[in-house]
Length: 111
Image 1: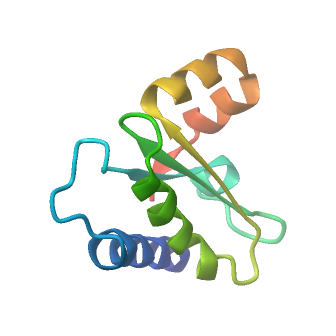
Image 2: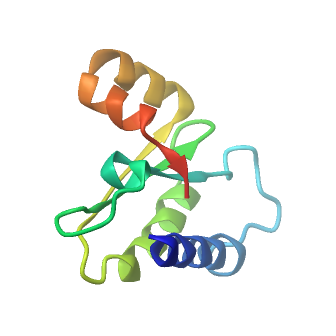
């Protein structure tokens, strides 16, 4: 799991700092990556997939869409990779309406 976390960090950093770097970033061009589900709980083994949540301060922008796609490409080597991109408000709203999302958010860890 440590190796996958490091790969995600390196790829996300490369995407946001080099490939999709914004010379004058706005407040909307910030993003956090958190692990959710079994991967967020620290479980690793056969049948455990990698679930990531990209959290934005506001609604999704074109920059966020491009930046979050790049780290997902090579991470899945041998694993299923699931992901969602939501704003903070959207995450809260969906968690209040869906127990599965609520549980997944409660089991997150910063990746």
